[in-house]
Amino acid sequence: MRRIVTFTLIIASLWTVPAQAGPSSSWEEVGRQWANVNSCDSGSHTVGVRASQAGDALGRRMFTRFSHQWFSAQKNAWIAIPGAGSGWLDAGAGPWVSHETGWNQTFAPAPAGASFRIRGVVEMQWREGGGVKRSATLFSPECSLR
Image (cartoon, rainbow, N blue to C red; front, side):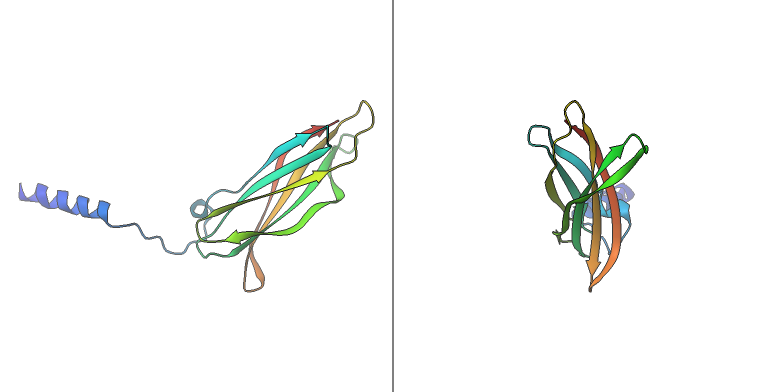
């Protein structure tokens, strides 16, 4: 009987002690990044891309940059759209915190009867001491503008 009580007390004490995580830089521990199209409006010819960037255990400053590509059926490739971008945006800092940023880009209308397939390109950086310590590039799903 004494062993059961001791075991129960040990288990109970584990539930009351807060978990403490040491610094880590593995992606599994800092969370997931994502990029998505949150606006695809042929009326205003605007594509909005939103992204979530997960903080790391070291609290590095996060920066996000948005640009866009269009799909060329002739080349069977995604082509960068010059001038369609945000520049680097400060996405904040903080260990274990995800920050969302977004960017809307307006494009010239497609010719009558045509449409453009466009996707967002999201570059992410984690910076510390004036240098880039980690980076990632994500692509949003595509959308079609008429």
